[in-house]
Length: 133
Image 1 (cartoon, rainbow, N blue to C red):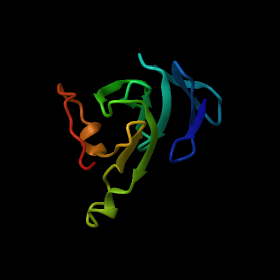
Image 2: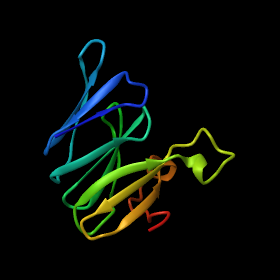
Image 3: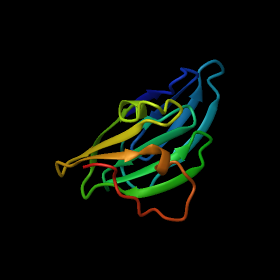
Image 4: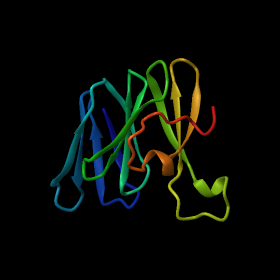
């Protein structure tokens, strides 16, 4: 079980092995519930608008914070053990309105860096390669 606050502190999400539930801080009202086919291990907010969950199948799934699934990608061969972010402007100093880079680590020893601005776009293809490994 993991608890994660959204960046503005207005909501929090609790990750369970089979699903995640997000709550409004002031009203304690459920905002959304998301599920995935794999055993869920980690989650992280990219912004107040996007949340990422990952699990034992090595899959990363991106959702809007209204519960709408954006995409799933096979990020690693084995289970994902960690998710983190790095500010976009740490690489591109002129861009401050971009989503952070997503960093994923897995049991297979790999570390991948993903451009969240690409991951969070609606699209037909889930065949996205990491920006760096």
